[in-house]
Image: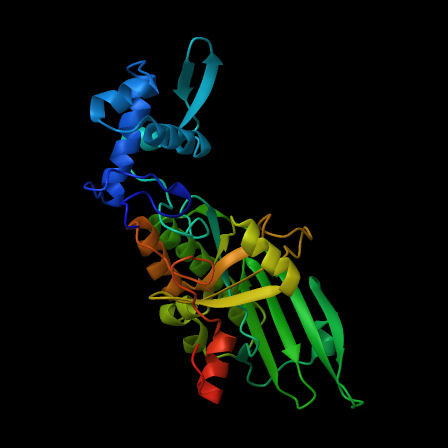
Length: 335
């Protein structure tokens, strides 16, 4: 809240000095104005006179309601007539549209997410690894030769496309091989705790199918306990959210990727990940925030509870990036 008690950030609506409202109360006020204009057919000046507000305050509320898509102008005759906007449902259920706090337009629940394995670079070690040149000739496998810098040794990276995702077999010159499981990550879900759970269950299904294929069809010598434990799968699953901010998108385009720490939630990062099958980026403005599944649970809970999420793009507080925090800890200066 600011000292005037108005809606924070981009939605600043000033109230009388002796009247300080919470976020829900402020939203109820906005809904009352919208209902008075549309359902009662009233005028801005009438609402201001009835409730003792200055007409400029009601005018600001109306402008924000239009900007947020709650109401829309219909015709201009003797006075402006308003109709229901595409987001009118926020007035009907009286739930505050996210976000209503300073800077948190970036952290919004009205977007999409996708769940995917985070493709641990080490993969799972294979005992008695297969000959990569033999596997490269099997149906469904593609092979790339990895030339090592300042060495005449080569390794092999083999990919197998599967209906539940893909397997990545990497064979190194030292004779060791690893296998990565990459479940399908093209499915998107609206952001909610329910969909977060549903998404994880589908990732697990894909993961189990890929593991079964590797163990029982390809006869990979891997300890099943390493890959079939639910906690292991959750720990190797990331959740990427569709970025809605032009500011963040500019940063992603300029830097290639970004990484930050969200206070009280955890590490988040973002990039413009592409779908390897279609060649298109998954989300129009990139994936941000992206985080591990356990962190995503806290993130979605915070969104659903209407909590303020502080981060590097908020006005209230500037959280240093992980790189900055490391630098400060190393040289002993203050963030």
